[in-house]
Image 1 (cartoon, rainbow, N blue to C red):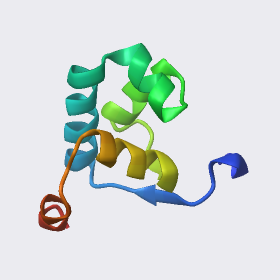
Image 2: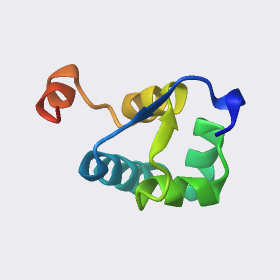
Image 3: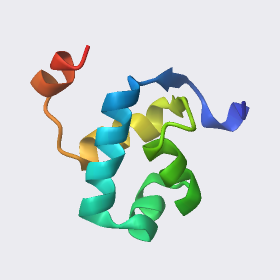
Image 4: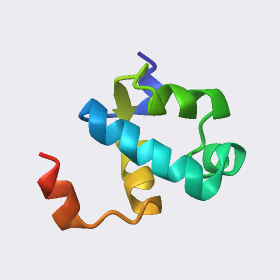
Length: 77
């Protein structure tokens, strides 16, 4: 694990796949990678749940970009 990523969290696989699928449809691969400050190949690893631990910064930014409400987040728990 890279210490530069900071605090890491793990999302439910279904939610993580749904989140990154929505983001890829909305922003496309390269613009999304630039917004999240990650490589474009890593975005697909996030989508396909090959990467379990996401940094809290990336997870928060992804949820913000997907425009997911607090109520929707509470339903996924």
